[in-house]
Image (cartoon, rainbow, N blue to C red; front, side, top):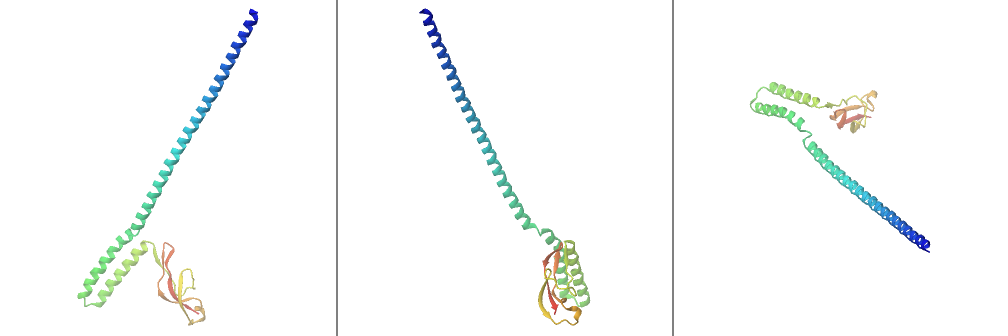
Length: 183
């Protein structure tokens, strides 16, 4: 009977040990699950932080580029305006001379010089006048004001007269030539 009691006691101890091991496993699983949850929460927090920083950086980039674009548009013509100031000065000097001038030929030459200076300055900036007279009518660069009977058959569909000159700026039309077309 003592043997039987010892076996029962051994079984009880074994059951207790098994229960303790099972509890330890459950606790470890719970701790592992908690650790996994904590890891996931930390990862989500880090990703959220990265997202917020990236969004703020992009927002700052948009603001900065918008401001730069506005500044550029406001000062885009600055170099052209500055270069035209010399021509303006020449016109002012010519105007003063014309008040007291008696020599019309000299005044005309002065105005022609200023005109040539203005044309060369604008051509340096990329402005180019269109050649329209005698060219076939092209709706991409010409604006027909009227049609008139062509003086000769070879001028039909061609530009006969130019009312307002057209211009290219760096090979892009900035003003269409207003023309009279032969019909």
